[in-house]
Image (cartoon, rainbow, N blue to C red; front, side, top):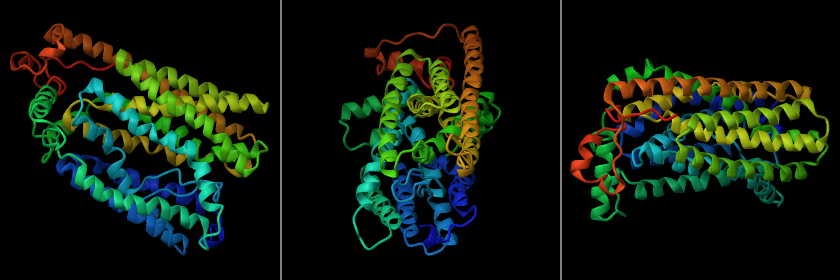
Length: 438
């Protein structure tokens, strides 16, 4: 690949950076989920991403690859031949990835969102678990095509076909889902009324909500948390094979050793989000997970023993991936504010990878002590604003209790009954029954 694209100097680093630049510039596209029918927008961004990935496999020069990266994102890690494409951002990714939690908020109540978001986000560590073995299997044959081109084709072409699936099967709204019965449609409408006060969720943006979100300190604090978490999150899967290789393992063994930590992070994502949803203690989960990740990076920075450093890898993986999955549900509040909050979160948060992907240069190997300490600092900083935000939201909830009184509990069996629903209309859109999740 270095020869095919003439990757001399810092050109490879720019291939990593360009998709985050596009991600930041086009982050406002997350609001398109509210302006256009859900299936139309999903099909558009999925098709565009797949086409960009496919075209990138035909790149004959660095400049061509940069253009494709800008529109799609994703490329190959430092261990070029033995790694699957691990990162996927850029213009189309900016319109897709951050919008998925927003999309799910159209269908689920706040206390139900985390469990659904975990399924989406846990796919990243789960995919990384099998990425090395899959890439080795794909590239170990003799296809007559450069291995990196083959990997991009295998990533891009199936994605293009999924655009048709998204257009055909993604519901425009809960009440229009073809797989729901008439009774379930009524339940879906009642839930939407309870959530935002009406069922007209797409087609227009409430500009006053955008202004309110821009003035909301909570949105900016969570964005700072996301920024610091992304600093370590972005570099970890990209350079973990390199770290193992510099511990003395072969390229193939280094790929194999990445699987257990990634699988642990998958399990930690599933369990931590479930517990946070049940207890409604999102901030506590973020703090605990951040400290676990911080401990892992400290072990990697201070210890020479290979076994201890491998334990540090497990702790770092179990901390940073689940932290992301717990921050996102914390952002989602009212309807348009959800989209604006997600936009702010990623506009600020995706600046973290601009530094993260520039960590772990070859000159710092094999210990990468400086870079481990930087990642540890990023992870520790995530816990500090999470703690401050939790205390702030406790204070905000106390003010809401003084203003509206104690929030009444509606029995589950009565939550779709009109009489019981009246006091819950717009409950999750900053109505009288709205309370911040801690």
